[in-house]
Amino acid sequence: MELPFQIDLSGKVAVVTGGSGVLGSVLSEALAEAGAKVVILARNKEKIDEVVERIEEKGGECLGYSVDVLDKDELERVHEKVLEKFGPCQILINGAGGNHPKATTSTERLNLEDLEDDMQRTLFDLEPGAVEGLFKLNFLGTLLPTQVFTKDMVEAGQATVINISSMNAYRPLTKIPAYSGAKAAISNFTQWLAVYFADVGIRVNAMAPGFFLTEQNKNLMFKEDGAYSDRAHKILSQTPVERFGNPEELVGTLLWLVDYQSSSFVNGIVVPIDGGFSAYSGV
Image 1 (cartoon, rainbow, N blue to C red):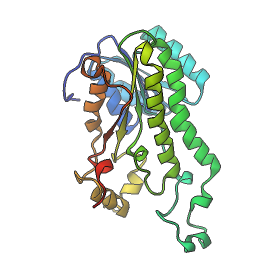
Image 2: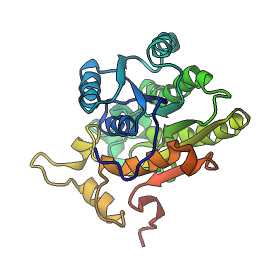
Image 3: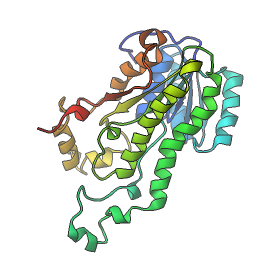
């Protein structure tokens, strides 16, 4: 990976939850390229190993652990392993999260006909368990790793937490009320943490990606023949740059936020990286 600009993270330990996904893996590799010792926490061991291997092949240092970010005891055990092998964490990227189809409506607006159609999922059909699980994954999946790994950062100096929010936090997207609400909670929590940790030297900010093509959304963005779906065309029509983002386009913001020299007075903000989507009124 060619970094957009150079920073020196040598000797720093960076923990990345969700670090084996399409976006998380790019963030992990960028941190390693900048010299950090990277720890990837995710669920899928095979995908974790693939990212670890790519980083190590380029001379980087990386550990990977299959862990449930909702299990604090499991996180504590991994924390002890990280301390033993790499040392205390100075950078935490909270990237674990996701949506759930049973917390998603079938249509953008309610039609009376939908109430009689068993194939349509309306607001009234959203499964409480799915909504609860989604909020746990996104919010508790940020809170618990923060509780565990920021213990290392207190008064360590130049420590930082970066949460992964979404432009859904600015304006809720149609069909995904629970996911939009959960990401809004992440943005709010980012601001709360920034104030809470201000006196002990931990900066907390968030990145809010717009539409990037990932494994989670590819079925929504493409038809079976590979053409863009109607929803994809609608998204692009509301995105001033008229394209989807590339995962590598998150790296510049990441490096700026983690580098103390570049952003030491930046604290408690949520940076949209969305091609102008959140700024466009549609008119």
